[in-house]
Amino acid sequence: MRLKYFVLSLVVMCCTKIAAQVERPVIAFDIQGKSDMVLGVSTNELLPLILRDKPDGKLRLSIHFIAMTNVVRYSWLKITNQVGSKVRLWKTNGVEVPLKDSSALAAWKLPLQTTVSNIMEVVPYRRRGDQWWSYGWAQPGNASFAYEFILQPLFGIPITNDVIVELSPLIYKANMTNQDVQLIEFPPIRFKVKGNGDIEKVDSEGKH
Image (cartoon, rainbow, N blue to C red):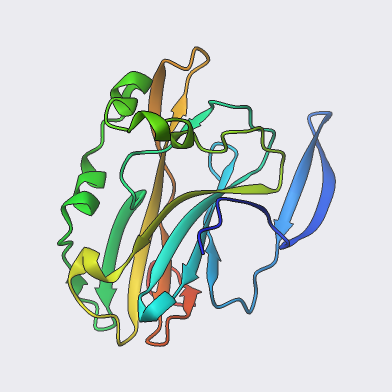
């Protein structure tokens, strides 16, 4: 089921860190032993979270962002591509499988800078509010849904054996006037997808 807005129960600690005499919340997450989620690297005050679901045997991945500081409305604009990331996939023998899906390929060619109006002109009017990530106000530790897709059709292969997947989440950051936006690409999140659908984060060399 699509989880558009939720507060993570994974927050195990919220404390105060003093740096340059400024207090800021430090949020720690413990997902050790979880087989359906992996965390990315915090960038521009957002932390990506990948969730795995497997309805009807289809491997569905969703990308969520966790607010690491207070987020005001109209700060972040989702890309119109439902994949929401640059996606790569390797077999366990190290051979990379090329993308087949045109929408996933288009995510590699997005403009680094554009305008809100350019993005919204391809979005149906009734859905334009949802194009903004975290349409309401988000506090530190709150997560909100961004993108969702089924993995197999992107590469045209069945996921019956272990594969390595890499996602680099994408989202636009709006300027103070909410007219211009800049593309933010998060550091790659690499994880193993097992034949049973479980996911496990690995490093760039495929190690746990």
